[in-house]
Image (cartoon, rainbow, N blue to C red):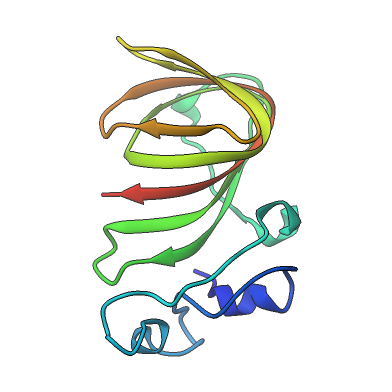
Length: 153
């Protein structure tokens, strides 16, 4: 996990420190004086270079077609690991997934998300999307898609 303070020096418009990273200070340093909430921060998502994202290999059984590559970066995680905020990116291809409870905003790229037994979602830059825990989805990624997300486990 990378602390937002590490991003501050690299990312224009980034704000104060947020998450703890092994070796970057204790978790208590990442919370406000009240001791329960993370520090506020801002990150310029489009400005984070691809090489700053970490590989998140897909299970081969999820790949329907193409050779999609998934990368990402966790920006913050709650102490109980049940809340996660970060950046996620996938290159073109078709994949399946079983979703967590997630809210995300597409920063760049385009995809069609088919929810089994539910709607077909066309998403692109500026679109916000909510996926429910357990939704079985099929993602057809037309252009490399980058999103900022919040997952509740």
